[in-house]
Image (tube, rainbow, N blue to C red; front, side):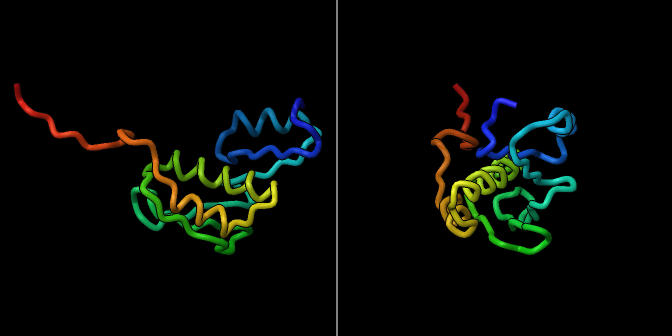
Length: 115
């Protein structure tokens, strides 16, 4: 209840803890992704490095990036929704995420040499 009424709560519909808290009441609009939410993602590569963004079942964008993992894909959809609330189009968000380079060393493969 501390988020201003002009703000937005972006809620993972698969996280029942968040859903329970939000259902207790708030004064802020809530947008859900995943679960029964209006926003979804569709993996186009098994490692989640390429995915489609769906709004009400319609594909509205795609992201192809260097990151992998469902958690990163879920963070991306949440960021797209938040940016849209601030006036950034989904296509601009997808383009920006597709050009995002993660920090060096994150998930970097290292060659192990015997001493």
